[in-house]
Amino acid sequence: MKILVINCGSSSIKYKVFTLASEDVLAKGIVERIGMMGSQLTHVLLTGRNVEKKTIIEKDINDHQAALGLIVGTLLDQEYGVLTSLGDIKAVGHRVVHGGEKFSEAVMVDDHVIKSLRACSDMAPLHNPPNLLGISATQEYFPWARQIAVFDTAFHQKMPQKAYLYGLPYRIYQEYGVRRYGFHGTSHQYVAERAAVLLGQALGDLKIITCHLGNGASIAAVKNGIAVDTSMGFTPLEGLVMGTRSGNVDPAIIPYLMEKEGLSVEEVNTLLNKESGVLGLSGLSSDFRDLIIAEKQGNTRAAMALDVFAYNVVKYIGAYFMIMGGTDALVFTAGVGENSPEMRNQICSYLKFIGVEIDQVKNSVNGKETIISNSRSSYKVLIIPANEELMIAREVKKLL
Ligand code: AMP
View: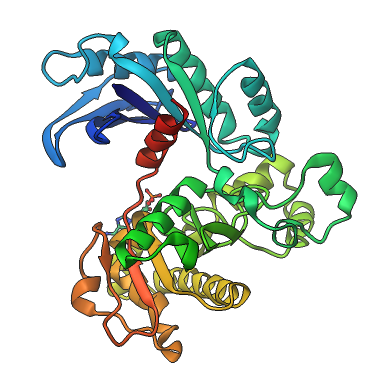
């Protein structure tokens, strides 16, 4: 049985086709710049883990419907497709960012679910509307297929009240659902599960700090398999300094800036979400690769942005170490966490005083499951590449 996993963003759709039983990925790809100049599809045909063929199609793609049409056409292509007919796809798994308090696990999509997701959309205006577009577009192409929504917030739903409540009047939570939800849950869950396998211990016996450090970045405290706290909050803006997002700021800065610069709500949202983070600090780039190169060339603003990023990661590690009463392992995942030995070193250098020691040969390995702490280290440090799509495929399997 084949299933399609879709991750639909505001201007992109990522996809993977899995064989459900073996969990093999047959093909994967991304449509980028939907509704913009220079839109294109990159499609990769895989055999085992090897890339068999990579195809790039440059074409005007006006909306998500058209993007999915192009994906479907590519999947059916005789040369680089993996389907003989659309009927091969029996189910579609969707990454949905915000499930609010309603969804603590994956669900089969029906009209009631769609209505609930629409209701959550004002809490995730950048994410949930495109997720819904992805669901409706796939429903048109695969009307027979089961549609399954897997939520970024679900893994965090078991967080205790003391971790999810803000110090606001309680009625704000009661009336509007304003609380910490947490995001990247599928990723935190996946890497925590993999870490337990690599460490040869039961997840239920472990305390793990999972660091999802990508363009969006968050940290979670996973105690005995439960996410007991996480850095993102009501929206994915809270917590760490990110690629373009500010992370935590004093809330009083917002009205202050609105007044000083005459900013509207939309403008201040743009400032915090798109113009801040390491991009805003460095004035150079949101891409950590650019910043690491610039730092090596002596760019002090790039160095400062990387410093602020690492420092904030360490603050959360410290906090989660305390609330869990210690930790067994620290896990790095996502673009920066998986691929940047420099950033892993920068973060772990703060942890030397508690006995964390990194094996520099192992730390030079990128994008591969590895234990990078040495045998003397008091705590294990691991790299686990993110694989949210596989986790979604597994949720689909479970529900089917
Ligand atoms: P993600 O959001 O998980 O896709 O991560 C994207 C981010 O990973 C990009 O902004 C890059 O800055 C970062 N990244 C990817 N490869 C590397 C690398 N080799 N070194 C440092 N950062 C990297």
